[in-house]
Length: 297
Image 1 (tube, rainbow, N blue to C red):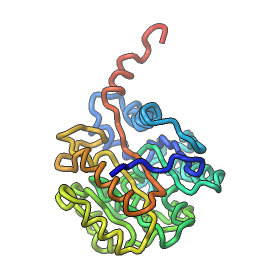
Image 2 (image 1 turned 180 degrees about the vertical axis):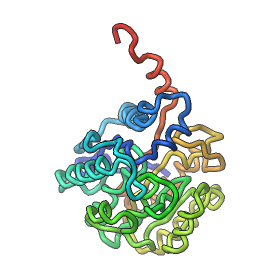
Image 3 (image 1 turned 120 degrees about the vertical axis):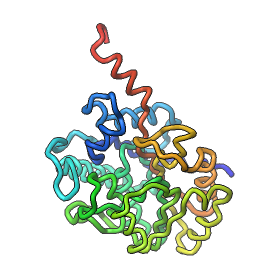
Image 4 (image 1 turned 60 degrees about the vertical axis):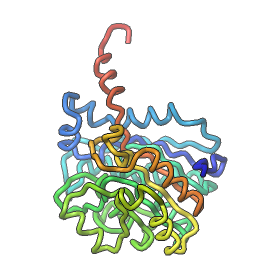
């Protein structure tokens, strides 16, 4: 089954290289040997690589600025760089609003929170006819009351209208938990993971989807939704096959299985949203570090 979808004038390509949503201490731990300011901005390099390798886009493109606010203001309510996150969210929503004819949104990020603005904008447009599949090793259901800091770990919470009231209050819509599924989930922190069951989210581990997408397709059919937005955090791919994300998480889906899952979803519903997030091109960043400051560059 082909996974090629509409690349037309009605598809907005939203380029959002946001990095401020990731916890600085976590980034330092997972990218050792790279100076912290460069490591924190690794998501911007990943976004540029995605732009370079993907086909030309036929529809409008909007680039979300990420230089607003103070990235070093510390953490409030479990969210680092709050003013920068707030400025980026506002800018992304304005970029989407500037393209009222866009029926679909393809987002290139950036850390996981870059799905929040486009997916809630699609929810405002399509209402109950939109389901969300969150392909990720992690559930991203943290809140200000859980132990892990970082807005990117609160992305699914925000889609559900839970979590930080200031940022959630900026969103054009939220999505009922019955229409959100976590797929490929196999790594979590216990105090946040409890929210999966408490909030009524459906979840599918890698073993549920290795041989067939049928369990996820049955869930999608049960929602009654004819449209789907897919979040692809590249760390859902087994790190024993290739390390694509910030963390190295073994036991995930293979790259081929991820393609099959997305292809099957595209065959069952109209894909109106797709995000590629959390790509960290380690070799490119190390080359960048080596070349920094050399003469004539």
